[in-house]
Image (cartoon, rainbow, N blue to C red; front, top):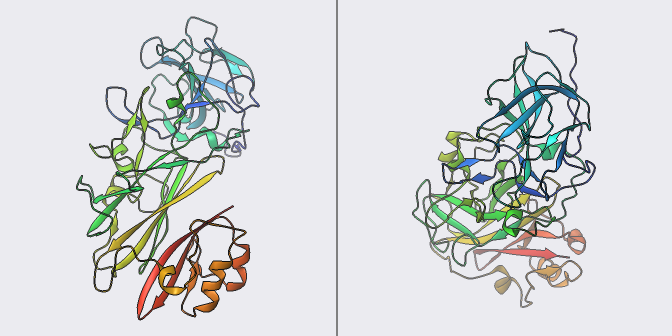
Length: 414
């Protein structure tokens, strides 16, 4: 290999279906929970929906065909087109799966130009789910005879345009509660009104692109791109990355590290059901999912008694995000269930949520109580002078009364 050869990273590519400069509906996302009757795994690609039978597939980047093979019968033929024709070192490639072997398609060794026709989608055995399974992969050799390549990058961080306008959606994870809590790595669920021990926090979240799939709307339920969590109260947990579905992962490993799947939080991913329960505390804070991440939790042993707010933020690959939260209580001396800061700090009732243009009651509480402080979602104390121009989001009002501390979540909306 030429030591001076410089391979520049891809800045962006178009879509594998026509028109290539238009956002297409997705039927599955990178890292999404899948179980079609065999064993659960995380989806190693995105499924770009064909919306019609026999849709033509186009190359998103120039390159050389390294693989034309099937992993399972007639529906799973796929093309791997490498960016360069290097054989002595590993190279990245685009994978286009579910190509019809009985119609025109490219073959191993063919050179391909960007935008060139490379084949047609096979008719899927589930009506309406014709799709191009699309992924960024990496392998080595002149010909890739086996589908043992590494899955290295979510195409949605490269594809443009990606005109997703829909925010992720939170649903109740445990009865009437927004999040579920259980003892770490068990199915012993804990009441949020009396937390104890090492706790797994579980959130039920899905995402949409905003592009409808009229045949079967459940297919529109995707997973978010990124999830973070933080905890506010007498002892804070700083903002922490839970999962980011961006780069390399072992698709058949660690699925139970990401997803909770039991009789209470029943994660499902098939043609009829899409329910995703994320164990957001299973993380060491980095972007890799590893077996050791399952040992992490929120350890409430020894933390001060009081009211805590668990705050979770879900993002999609287009930058839309949604924040949700739930109050939990560590019981102890002088802790009363259901008491809010505003009941004690001011005779003025603060609307919650409160509109950004109607912040006068909140300003009044802060001006008239020296011990009252408002914190933003990053744990930063805010100056009283900034209150009148606060953006939409989650905030925390902390104050004292009669030697007792109180914390109240404040949600500001447009």
